[in-house]
Image (tube, rainbow, N blue to C red; front, top):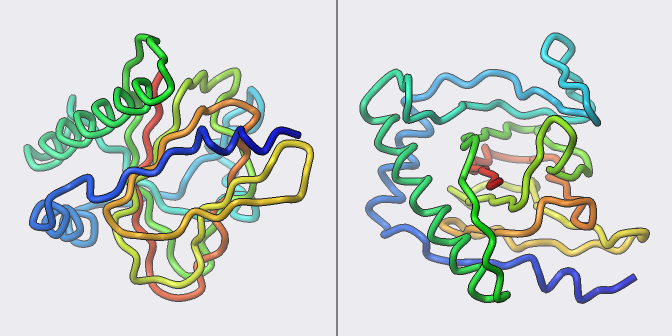
Length: 194
């Protein structure tokens, strides 16, 4: 096992100006309709049978095309720009030159008991190159993002801090989990790049 793999999990703090972050928090809390999160297991996506033992989270799919409001379109475009620029920083850091496009931006709301068991983001129906999580808030307990070393029980916990964006490769070498939220609500934004 090579623990150097976890060097490829990069943390970027203070991604948004504070006023912008405050406005986005209000948008997440008061302006969105969330639905239960789907699960993709191997090549099968389960829409009808949502297994809350595996993933217990509410999702709002953020779109710029067919958005319900201009505000949602704005946030979709703005966050796509933030994720794109951060992935470009990530590629520069590791001297990578892959062409990519940010896809499928989702706002996630984990309420008390919300969690997501260990999984990887790349799969047959979800071919992904880079994974991103943006921590919107930090005023909750539990809900920790943790990575497991391949072939081991050893884990790395990412400290929760609002306005923090994490980027890593989506492949099988980076299994990760969100531990159960024990108090409050955890808001985050996830996106992937192909």
